[in-house]
Image 1: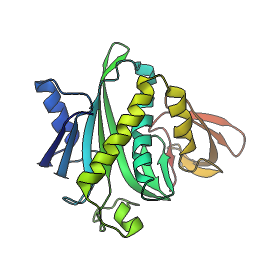
Image 2 (image 1 turned 30 degrees about the horizontal axis):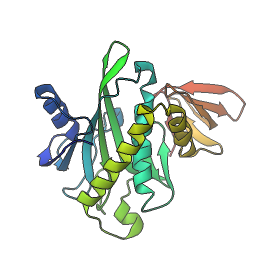
Image 3 (image 1 turned 90 degrees about the horizontal axis):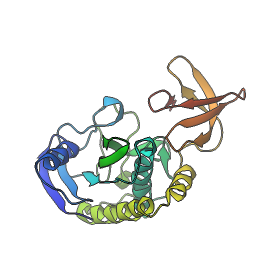
Length: 243
């Protein structure tokens, strides 16, 4: 992979990396790792709470120019799987809550935000921001269900060692799409889905309903089958899990 830039503080590692990309050529796989983010970004416009020097807060850049715009969900899949593979070394019960939150049991251990730059129907740049809760044990925000690796295992971890390990996992899964193994990625992603078996409650913005996960389409659509037998498909932000 590329270089690692370790910085003390930034508003967000993704902003720092994008600014770096605007000024100079950056090697693919370059990582920006911060001790603290003042404005870490999460999905749906949320912020990401993180105590200084306690967690893995980093962004990585890829140039997946073989991936078409309509297939960009595969980037989300490989990033999610890389984090799962890394965490599985330390604990069981790690899953992916569609599209790319990483959970331990019913609690969130990692958030991911992917920003793709397109040129026509090709992805020319993908900046992936990742926040993994590692050594933090107290949370002051109103986030409903955070958990850290330290809370799960009772151990404290060397962040620089873990960053190297998760970087290796990224290399592994990025090579999958470079070598045309998208189907393998899709199937492995599905096998790690949060609540992948059984009926659970969902909210479509109008009402709650019970359904099970029937499929995830290559474009990222979540296909649910309700308890009345109706098949419904949702894009990101069109439905949410009732936790």
